[in-house]
Picture 1 (cartoon, rainbow, N blue to C red):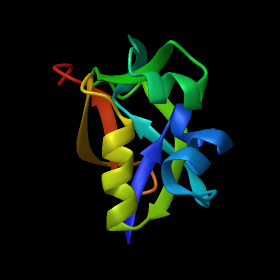
Picture 2 (cartoon, rainbow, N blue to C red):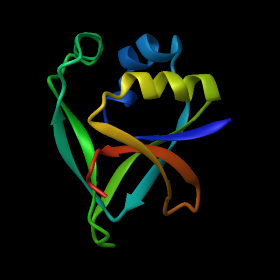
Picture 3 (tube, one colour):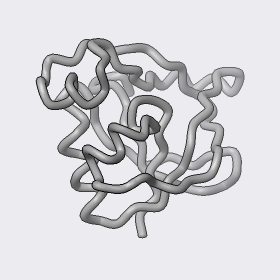
Length: 113
């Protein structure tokens, strides 16, 4: 199984159903050294699923005082590929370690590292 951190629209039940065909189960998690910015979405399928034109996007600051709360979900490799398809080209997937010492994938704003 893969671990995927969500801090935005992948937490929405409708987005999970549209993207994975099921509701995900996860645990709360805190990521340090990041803040949330936003990106404008133009992909019609993503706009329809999320209902939002602007989506949150992580930006790395490296400051321990900056934190982002979200959820770490257990998903299959296939579902990780589906998440990659959902996240538009303005994002890139990286791995990080969280306060709970779990490592998980997450999506950051492209060119924000």
